[in-house]
Image (tube, rainbow, N blue to C red):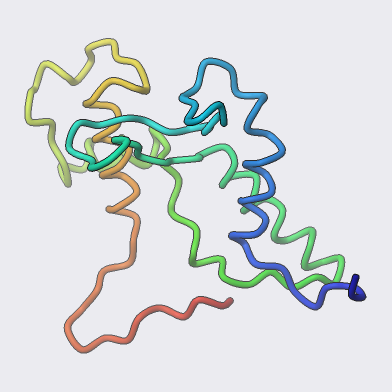
Length: 144
């Protein structure tokens, strides 16, 4: 094995957290016996119909960046993570009028995280948190 690492990528941290903590999230979707954590299914998605969110695992990944860097291990590729599929982020978009449900009955109606409207809302929230792409603009840097 090599010596100490010179850097660590955010996707490596997330991947490790998903592998280690995947089994502790009860009642979640599994694929081939592997628990997938925070994922939903939606009929508009090809294949297995899976929409990955991993809100808590990404939150933990973001929370580890500063202490790892303070310990002398730089973390790169933070932009490879998504924004959090968090009800506060989606709710702000809803309240601000940026998005509105196709079916007004959805607002205030009880729902589960895996119901189609919830999966759609969470996926849209992640997309809305991405930086806008402008014609002629360069892609965002992948390193801090």
